[in-house]
Image: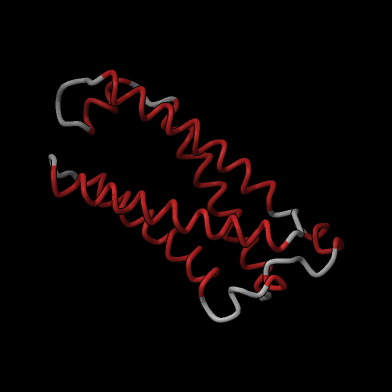
Length: 146
């Protein structure tokens, strides 16, 4: 499979996961938040989760639509930004896991965020990752196949 199509597949998987996570976060009931934070409901935590959910929906929408963009520099910039973003998020959650109450949801988040950061980083910084042509779609006819 060509690198361009692999990147499109990564964008699609990330977009779908982001939209699903965003919708679940946005619509999460109070009981869900109470269970995650072990006992007492925290309105600020719930609001932060809702706001993050809105952000994930927006990121998912951008990634879903970026699959049809054939500008290599733009697609490379998306890979760089998402690699950095996912790595920083995984470090933030890892710090929270070891400095506050430990819970299983942090480990799930760390696994997902680290994997996503690794995949974007591998795409961007592995062999050929600095070449614009691996990000550009071969022609506009390839968009019809999606």
